Image 1 (cartoon, rainbow, N blue to C red):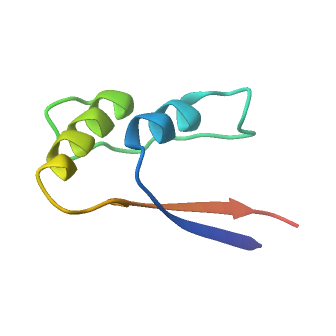
Image 2: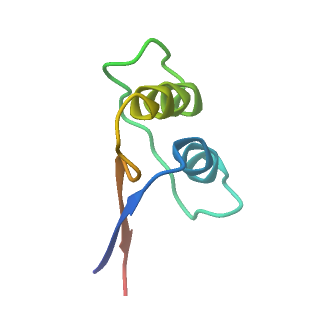
Length: 68
């Protein structure tokens, strides 16, 4: 198994990428917690808004799993 990790900034782009089935073999959302919305893209809009009130540039951490 190969793990690829990355700090990310553009939360909305990440949310759209994660939900685009053409780019991913398998996507499964288990839970969205701590946000007003239950939708991942809307929750990431909220995360971007919160980060704009700070000095954070990469406020997310993304991890991809690849099987070899």
